[in-house]
Length: 446
Image 1 (cartoon, rainbow, N blue to C red):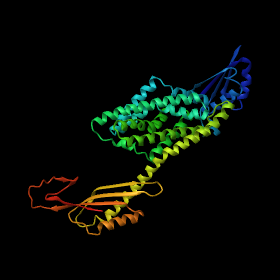
Image 2 (image 1 turned 30 degrees about the vertical axis):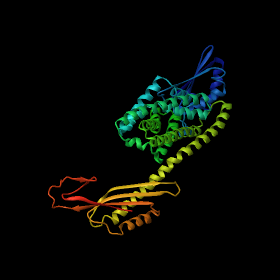
Image 3 (image 1 turned 90 degrees about the horizontal axis):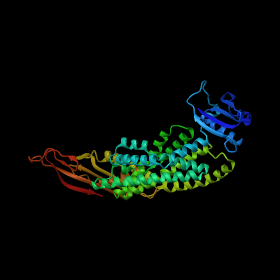
Image 4 (image 1 turned 120 degrees about the vertical axis):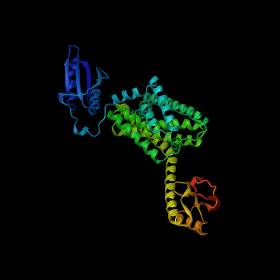
């Protein structure tokens, strides 16, 4: 519940109440008259706040005369129920939205401190593959506010809010990248390879794109509805914070391909989140109350949406391409495993499953891609002469695509059980070898 308090000259109180009765029930309005001023108390559900403020603005209240203040109310007796037409598309007033945005974009000690702490947590979570630490960093991260400010400033054509949002978000991003760089340098000194989490965020795919879009829509819906902003912060941090810190970590480890992939994912995330908030704001009719600013905001909104959409298409292309390649790789992985199970496993002497199976797919989205397959397996007997050709032909037949490179490496194992001094726990190439079995020779087909 919200309570709108209107202070205005005593002679205007009755007229204002008559105008408000069109949108608010008389039982929700209280007039307190004084000798010089009148106080009007209006209790409404949050979704009606904007309508009341628009009506007061048309009467000149808050602009020409009088003062308006808004406060929260925990409950009323009897309760005020929302009208049927307001239950679905519910939002708080523009003034409340603007006040919330202003509070979230303050570049102060708290913002910088939380950015540093959340970046450290995110960096530790990335290099140690620790999900708990990574989630904790998202909760602490303050990067949500400036992103909302960018969407709100674009929709309402507020240069002041846009400037504050860009300054705060830019500062937060630079801090996160710098901390990630320091962590990456220390991690690199210990001669460690990039962690699984770090590599994953350097290879953007369609799932990351969907997360970014969902985060942007979540931000907009929660914000205009007055829902807890903690949920919004986690949603945005999930899309932004780990990727931003990972750029610095990859740079500190001199893993430039990971840094570039994280940068592409970061730009995509920012664009998706801003577009998501702008879309929700547009649907929920978040616009300036003044008629002149409304026209200006609508004109600039179209330009900004087109600009953001073009940037989105440019940065989303490599993500879509990577996703297509991953899909193709999974497909060839399944086909190759199926063919190996049907053609190689039944052969006499073959030890299954294979020691190694590597599949690399590269090329365009719509066609012209190349496939490289490498398989290594153990066998106590040589494979039939036509095994390689049949194996390759069957994969190509099922995939309906030519394989540019297929390497089938067969490691022959000879049984020398008569030699008594062999180690019974011997492991060769990652495979347990029984007493008397040693590698005799390696045959590469293809």
